[in-house]
Length: 546
Image (cartoon, rainbow, N blue to C red; front, top):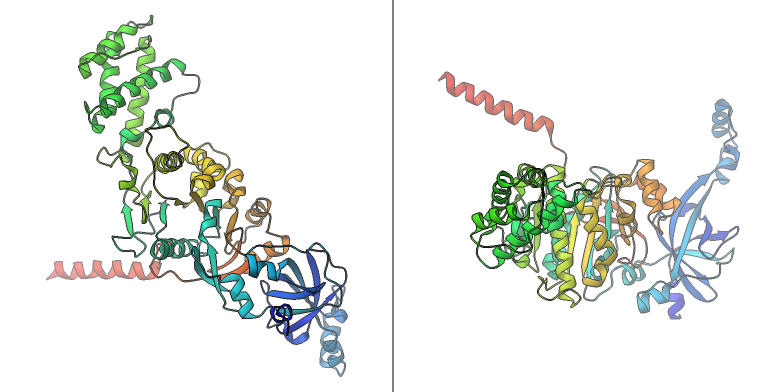
């Protein structure tokens, strides 16, 4: 037996009928093959002496004598109960639509897809791909391949190429579809098996430490930012400066630059930065004349508060100084809980290489969570750019590639609203691959996600989805998601996923492994929690009565 016929062997399930294209064929299935063949099954056929591998995208069944035009139910029942029932049954048929993905030997020898350019011929036999062949395709050995589940139907182990995560990943599903379990499985195994640095921006505080030890994970609850690491642009956004407030922005840029310079010189601490800025502005506002631009008021106030003379002090009016002061007071009110001068400045002491860092963003307003998440996304990307020798000298570097995971991505990376997280997620989606920063977005409302970011996630793990607009939105952003495969999504069970993209050898329907650690994504047991509370109340009343 030739190697080609060996890899193209397997149980015969039907023949190609009708017209075929180089991408699609219709298969008339054997009557007893329906239990063997399911949507997502992988099949093979011979094309010009070569074996081609495809995926079943849809299956239909029919009875010609019971067409859609039949309207008399009593007649149908009489026919099915009569002597001609066996004749009716003999006309039953099953038809599958198969997408041909690649010549099989190319996948096995080089790990690359090579799509056929001519159509398989009608009358060609189609077989189920053998488990050992599927194992060679979907469970390759070698560094960087990570198991996350098994092929639905065959049970063959399914692995993803971790090196392709820098081409980014979207994990999408309805609430309760298995997103948190998928994130848990991937993160634990990235860290434990491969030592890949991973950061989760945990919007609902559901991950904890993922059951990882202290040497493997770090939980920042709540995640905070050292004010000394804030950029001028972050301050502008957080303080809510209007684009046209040119004079006020000039004051802030000058003041923040002077203060951070003295922080780097060791003259003031991180805790002093914003309070000192407020103090300088308060003093300057009292001494400035409201109607004239006065460069001396800021300089005098700065010297009184800091004890030395600033440089290049801008000339501004009192109302402009008061405007900056109001904005900084607003910043402290809105974001003060997210600022902590005790947070290390060194990025590697916050996000430790080789570990999972879980940044708990629960109990925060959306704008605060946005500020924290975007801050670390910015620093990670800039530090990785610098580590590759493409940044300015003297900037912080980060020594290893990192995978960033954004939960509730439709909140932090929304379609119709500007957020800082969207800005930096979009930068990572465009540039992160070159510098070793991978982006994973997780959402149950994909139609609310920014389309540019979603479309740049080369990889998709799509679990159960039922909302037609969500499915259409994902289809528009996914080259490999055909209409037939999209039709499968509502029927997936919890934990079953359609996986596609460069991290996968070819599209597949996969049962994701169950995470070894509990996560908070499960439904609350209303009855059980209520009973526990009532029991505690009853015990308390009994103790009081004694």
